[in-house]
Image (cartoon, rainbow, N blue to C red; front, side, top):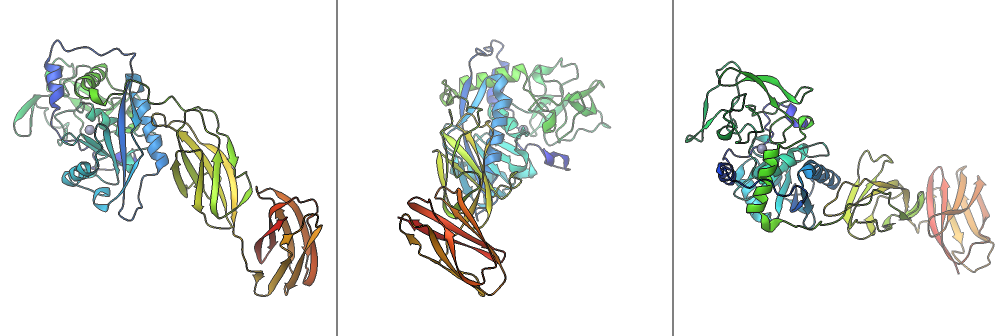
Length: 481
Ligand SMILES: [Zn+2]
């Protein structure tokens, strides 16, 4: 929505042809009324995330899922819902990421469209810097990154086009309403058709504007903000000189996201009729998946505070009811102010190949499925990465040796031979294989001396010895047989 505040930005760049199917539908006086409103139709959606050729620039997976959740919430009252068909496709190509003309966009759609689904392309730019557009010939949608998000309705608007809806201000695309000029009775479109200008009382509604009689007159073709009644701040005059304000609550107008919340009844009827008559073979009449449980997830590891080797970090959780995919976020910050890594996985564990060493990382998991991306995250906690080293020195002037590292059971202590030139306090922590600290011992300024570390009571297994000083830290592995 932020974009619409800027000057000369179009919310949508869908071309000005009136949808042919809708024309025939509205001209039929005996058109069928809305289908059984109790029956939800589920339509498949393919998402193509476009990044730069070097692989950067992708809209975060989390934000894609949040936007998808908003799309389904917007359509829920109208018994139209969407589900993800297949995985989110990652495409890296500068030409499409920043495309500014329809021929590049059309080529992108021809290359990557999946059959029998609503194809949505997420890009950085679009023709006319618009927030999005629908291309009827390819039957696909583009939505720009800055116009998506949990409170954005651009995707809803573009899917409205996909479902045959024109703008509420149809006929005014590419024109700017000027309050100082007399409003004409007709508009000439594409140099050929003429279209009545919808009057404020709506008496010519069937042959003016978008053709719907429950979407009132609207001439505003540039992004606009609304007042507290969700109406345009700008007052317009109809051809008879009657003042009116546009209704900003309709998804198919150009008001800002905060104004928009609904489709009209006639729009809803048209969308359902369009699905029935033109897209019946897309429809899935059974629920693709049930909603994901709102309960918090249960994690199995690593435990909060655990020390894990920086390579091959295994994150595990219990299967969550009705989820078949999980989004994992990993951040340097416990409040996830930045997301350093994100992954989508299908099973209930994931091995992170490698994370920077000697840092604390926080992780959380959001369960979802093809239909429901609205469940929240559960925070799993933090873990710290370490590396095991063969080097036996804290730094050049402070060395040490540990022996033995392969230990017979029942041994009470192991040795540390310090060769420290500096005055340093030393802390030795012993961790078990699952990361819990089992023993801790302090040595005040050991200098050059042989010291003993108590290991009494440790059972057979692998342990980590963490030797910390203010000049550095070493981690060594020991094994008790
Ligand atoms: Zn549009």
